[in-house]
Image 1 (tube, rainbow, N blue to C red):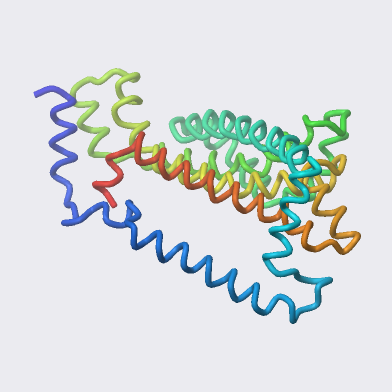
Image 2: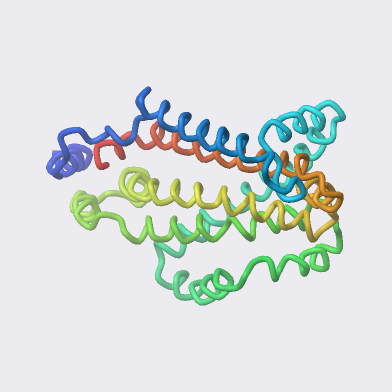
Length: 276
């Protein structure tokens, strides 16, 4: 019996539920509930919005009109281009650094002991407190310190989740692999990476949310540009309808990106459906 056959038999021997993927795939009824809940919230907001202080909150119809105003004058497109450049640059840096350090510290005890105190300390410190130091470190108030800010916010969920995924590999699979004298490369491709993938993807989903927060906070503190600039500038003149446009854009981008990661999870890690 080969190692691959033994691995398949071990996977098949694990208990599974009768309908393992029913919560993984959204049915038409699920979408109806989700969209209905959003419609209900918007309806209540629209109905009671005019009765509230317009300096604090505007109804969705006003925000909808403000959205097209900002699209028409080009402000929203310019701000989104600036912000997304920072966001995707920072997430790319966080993904590379988090993966490398997470894998290394999860696989080798020496690396884990060397970086764990530093990771714990930096993760405990409010990242907002470190952002004013980034322009000084980079000698710039341009994109590099804002990209670094996004990476600072996003790297720890990826690093910690990847580390735990590598450390929590099924011991039975490792024993089977070693009993067949599996090479280190096959050990990674056949056992460690597939086992750590759910942890990594969970870390990426957390990193997206934190990265969006880091993007806006960095734009508040460093240069005042992008979507963060729109929020501050329209808040200062009490144009709450326009202020909410970039806020809703950020929330929508977060939902879409996390949904994409969920879809990607089903494509690159289909075995998770059997385990859920």
